[in-house]
Length: 303
Image (tube, rainbow, N blue to C red; front, side, top):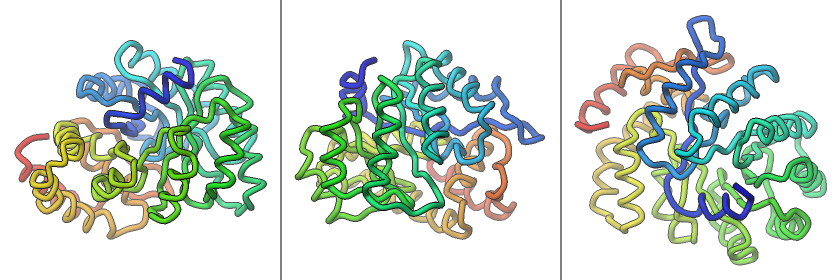
């Protein structure tokens, strides 16, 4: 789809980052990945971010990346839009974006450039170079060391017609309001904080009703139920699920840096869709933590 079609697609409906499947040796397991997408797509997400943050983009090799995007595009063609993660150093991000376009992805989510800090001029150059390298739509992710001001985003919006989305992973309400008020409907706005359900109602009030769900990877029916409750302003359902599942889930997630990904892989294994171990430097949940998570999932009564 063209950038404007992608913008329309991601402006409503739940989004998610599928896990990337690894085998017992830690290598990409394509058959498992394709089966994962076959399981998740029918639940009705508006788009899936292949090789995104929860998909451990940061640990993938340059050879693995195109295989993953190609598998996602082929597996989801005609079912759900595929947006490919891209990030790291600018030239590597460009390689990823171009590989994603070649594979047939509908767009690119531009993840942070990671370690090196940079000023607004450098961040703008980074985004512009990636946008100029492809014709598909690009969504910029405001997270980590990639913090964009409203002024920078406005300038980029004028120069890059295929920059169609802004995803926030910072949770700075003042900044989010300023960006939304300044850019209006030029962008599609997405919530991207870890375990975004906790912030969903507040972000909807800011004009950002759409978010990406990590728990969709192992409790897709509940994830869709929660999204619909947000869309319907059903606070009773939201509060029940926040109280019974999401808040105790956060308590487990916050025990170790990096568990935001590890706990999702643990959840997938518990429900019978094992994606293998996480890659270093992440670490898998401990047995007692897996037991704690399993008890929460069982308590839901439905996945």
